[in-house]
Image (cartoon, rainbow, N blue to C red; front, top):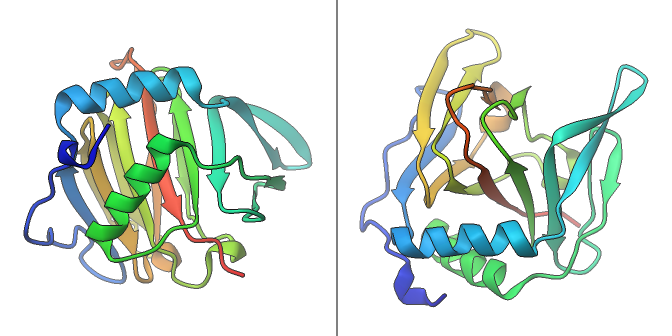
Amino acid sequence: MDQSCFHFPTTTPSNLLPHEGEAYYHGSILETAQADSLLEKLLESLPWQHDEIFLFGKTIVTARQVAWFGDTNKCYTYSGKTHQPSPWTKELLLIKEEIEKRTDTSYNSCLANLYQEGEQGMGWHQDNEKELGPNPTIASLSLGAERRFDFRHKETREKISLHLAHGSLLLMTGNTQHHWQHQLPKTKKVTQPRINLTFRTIQP
């Protein structure tokens, strides 16, 4: 994998959210063949583990699998569990560097999520953990099966939906996490796996 495999538009996409938030869909930033190769590599090489969340006094093991990477000591606590970062891989560092150029933001960690098929998803939530700071910027690269992704305003209940293509980049920034929830809904129509790499900045 080298830098020539990336292609970025020269203009910034329009904001998807009508108010109180910023989300920008950049479309595919990888050549299809390279996105295919990267998906296969990450499926085989990352230390995938089923996630555990603490909900209503019980520990629940999710169907989704995760892997956490980052700079030294950049731990991440969500759903009652603290994740210790694995060292960056060569592929993740290259992706991170390219996304940092495009989004003009530095990231020190990455939560990788693996959904083996469409009936694995993620319900409504916000990425508002204290480690991410008050207005986090999160860059999400999607690989594999195209999936629908939804935003929902917390007060008005407005909903914005889009489909995340293979090799595409979605950026959430500004005060989005204060006012909007997001989800990856389940579907029986999808039978192939999807990985999303969510680059984040853990605050001191």
